[in-house]
Length: 84
Image (cartoon, rainbow, N blue to C red; front, side, top):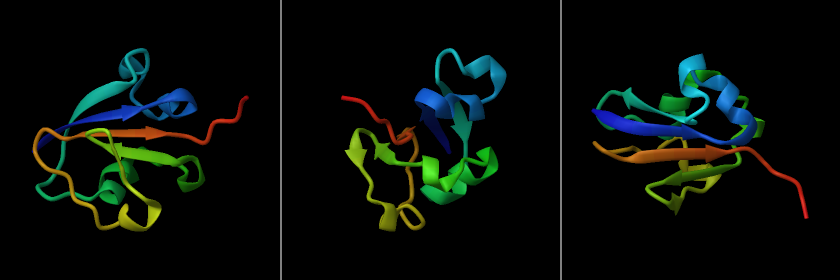
């Protein structure tokens, strides 16, 4: 199935070089793939996977290993960000 995978801020460095400026890419994943399964090949440090959204809805950390995506979903991930 096809999803859109988006990484923000410092996480964009984990995308292929030609996708970093747009911070997103289309991704072919197995049907019912979970968030954890999708991000595993990108070697994201889990301490950097802070805010996770599917289609704009927050997914808490305890659901990320089991929450499956559907065709056409948008998975967006942000690292922790400090500021004020």
